[in-house]
Image 1: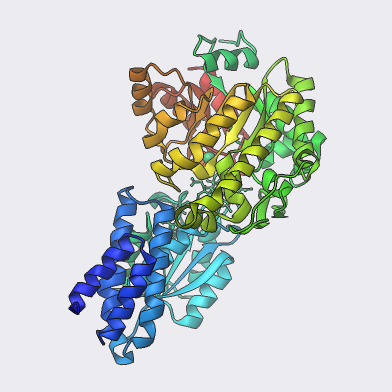
Image 2: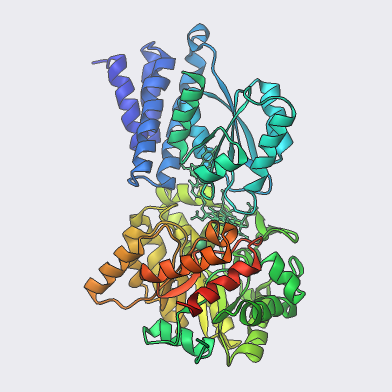
Length: 216
Length: 340
Ligand code: B12
Ligand SMILES: [Zn+2]
């Protein structure tokens, strides 16, 4: 018997948590075949599963490899569902620029932040790694993003975050573009010192912070 | 009170858990800083590829200028990968070299080269150790640094593909772990032949920041254990980040000391060791990105006293020192141990 949309969404979420990419693909195809709402399946299925995986990561039940596998499963599902999203249903997505600061090529944490934000239905613009301050600001302006999220993983690179924030001020964009920072050496005290709008301890918290900042 | 033991005696005793004139201070990971480079006249990037300069920066810098009980080479963890075919991006004066291109893909079957010891910077680091042994060997412990098999294996194919392969095709990563083990053992044996008293294994990827306790036990710990047994000299094992759930597994590797960051609950680990009758000195845990980089010398002395009070046996930065760390702060670690 055919499953209901709710049942399929629940199964999708579980399959993401279980890192079962093949099952996600099967379920996503089932959603499409039944003509169920694809956006809903992303939101209530895939994103929910990734959110759960993020919680397991915070609880130290899951680790980086597990999150990478979950995120592969999410991406597989999105690839199948995306062409079937009704454009009007999709609505306007908030844009967020994410990147790793100049001199720093540690991008695993940043990629997790990206995955969580995309799964939470933000339009993420990935500025990549080793990103100079001016590129962060230029990209945000060009894309009309209201938030820049910057990662630094080394004590030797974290000071460049302050340069980015100063540049935002110099260009009179303070308040228009908010800056969220994270990465292992970053602390709330450091965030305050350099004038960042928020510090995010992990990828899940980054989603909560973005939602608060944008009221969504 | 002035010292009555040489650094070498002090550290050897501290590693055995025997009484010392004062707490021992080392830097298990790299300690070259800009001010240290200026103080001894040997700098990056040249010191990465020149044995004399490496020996001066590490040896003179560590033993004479900072006053550590052990000196070590090299500064980065890309030497094995480079010797096994990775393309390296120079870090210039201000950064450590990093891997620009990994030598293998997951599907490749790697073969360990016979001429490993002549490749890239391997001979430089080995020669630096022999020069340091000649000059400082009677005063301080001379240590050669190698990567852990798990971390070297990661560097051969890249961390994300590696971590995914751990799940999808675990059979395919075994040859890379084997190769990591062979590279580490060959490198370590060469250091020992060149006069190294001890070996430091940096297995930064084996951290619980990256992998689960189960993966650590299956894929990292067994290779660390085998490597330590085969090296046959005292080995300090350094792993970054969180480790609480595997502190007993680490003790089981047979290492002479475990070097940890402040992310580890040291009193809890000590209690667990005591209960099991394990005598493994804990080395650490002065925060390299916190107090050591940003604090004042007095704050660092306090941090040393606090670490000792929490049960740290041998004082060291918790991980590699940031190159912009003030020299006065590194010296303050030693001062803090002197007035403890
Ligand atoms: C993996 C790793 C690497 C990999 C990186 C692969 C990659 N593509 O990212 C490789 C091998 C390439 C590498 C290279 C180097 N590394 Co490295 N590396 C690590 C390691 C082991 C783990 C980092 C990691 O990915 N953690 C897992 C992720 C998930 O955690 P995370 O990044 O902290 O992210 C979480 C939060 O911080 C937060 N977050 C992260 N980013 C962001 C961003 C935003 C916007 C927000 C809101 C939140 C957020 O959310 C994430 C999860 O929820 C750490 C040590 C450690 N155990 O932390 C060293 C470490 C960071 N590396 C270090 C060093 C020195 C280097 C090298 C210079 C060494 C060398 N010569 O090989 C090069 C540097 C290259 C460069 N120029 O950047 C040092 C930095 C020391 C310092 N000065 O502070 C560390 C601390 C280890 C050490 N002491 O040796 N490294
Ligand atoms: Zn470390």
